[in-house]
Image 1 (spheres, one colour):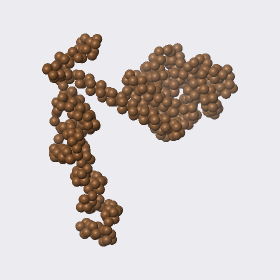
Image 2 (spheres, rainbow, N blue to C red):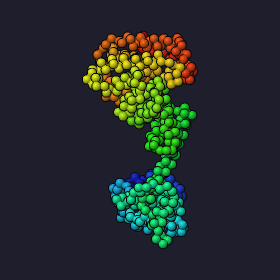
Image 3 (cartoon, helix red, strand yellow):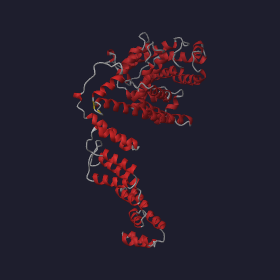
Image 4 (cartoon, rainbow, N blue to C red):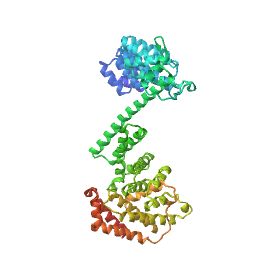
Amino acid sequence: MENCASYYYKLNDNISAMKFVRAFHTMESKRNFLMTLDRLEDLLLLEEESANFLEAAEIAKQLGDLLLEVDLLGKAENFTNASLLTLAYVLSFSLWGCRSKGWPLKSFPQKMNLITKAMSFAEKKSRSFSESVSTTVKVLSHEHSKLFELMQYFSASKTHENLMAEILCVRKILDAHFRVNWAKCKWEIEVPTDLRKYSEERILRNQHRNVVSVDTHHYVSASRNYWLRELLFVGIKVLRVLEALNNSSMEKSLSKYCQISSLTCIFDIAKVFIDSPTRKFQNFVELSFKYFDIVFPLDSRMSLSENIVSLRKIELSRNLLEEVIKRNISTKNELTYAQIGRVVMIWLGSGRPKSDLYKTIVGKFPKTSSWKEFIVILGGIKESDSSASPLSNLVGLIQKFHQSLEETYYADWSVKGYMLPNCFLYLMERLVLLASQYSGSYFTTRSSFVEWLIYHESCDSSSASLVTDKQPYPRKDFDFLVSVVRKLLSGGCNTEKWRSCNINFKYYYPVLVSNCLLFCACCV
């Protein structure tokens, strides 16, 4: 039988083939044969002939024929799913059918027939279900409804736990408010002392016998508060899921890319609510700041994966790091060397901040510090530098960078807020890279060179220009670097002060030694 059916299918003679298929001994063998040949249309016909309407409905679903699926569900007396599926079809076509781009709801040729069919199925199920479907049908109307009618539909949808109708009601209620002529609204000049009493008195003004009406602006305020609460609620739930993913990635020791992906998503959502009085969102923003420790790790090799480098170039990454800068300089006191170091690290590792933030940084850096002059040159906005050559810009930049690091090095290391070892060595490494440009060659680590490229891609200022002319090495800068490395490795008194300034020395010491050895290689 199977061979005969297969033969006629190859000849595209479906009628003859089905005669042999119907002669199979069991329904299961018929299904297996037709499924193997992907003859879903023939199998659907066979299931319907055998009154297997649920199985036929499932096949119609696979074929994408939703209306046929509805009819078959009705024949199977699955009235609930038949009715709900019909309403879903009506909703989708009311929003996106006939080249529509979405809201508001619109009419289409089959709409009334489908609504009648959905009601017919619902009436065969139960009275409660029929009332729920009736509410949905009213809300699906493309005609404008009065506000009090929408409130009745909304109340009914909540009673029947009909989420579709509830959401549509809320959206239509908003539309009703949007259609109000705002020119007719009145502003209240005086601020009432007893808000409850004031509200009751205002409501009673609109009372006529047993009917009380409420002004439109009260509904507008209520709807705004409602959606704000909904956004806050959903936002917190999403952020908690992302936090759990981030914690899971750390517990399972997954790649750093997994961690920074979740942290950037947390920041992207939390920053929307950054002005919210809810402290929870502020906590999530601060959680996202762990991104800084991942892209500027103690072991710089950890930040060199292709995914992490690519992620650092996107706008969201830059925005997150700029937010770290804002929090870092938001203090009312004078910036410490630790705060200055983090700002310069981010700048050199990701590019020049946006203009407004750049001006804020310049204003916050201490006037007497060499770091202020360094970032002004680095920003490339000094009038005297506007027509200068790349070489003269580089000379000025290196001189100020050298002076800034020298100022930091000779400061009191034991003071709270002194620059952390990894930050200081990071900046020294960048000075090596800048100074080595004089010869047209580069002596640096791979991670520093990658960040240097990222910095140049994001900058168009004169301070970021490349130098192609060979010049003698700036010996004074390299002598300073060698002197610092020698003293750090010898464990002098300054290193001991660093050790006593409330930092985890065991955590930083291996990095201190390894970076110093790299400097030795670069400066030889």
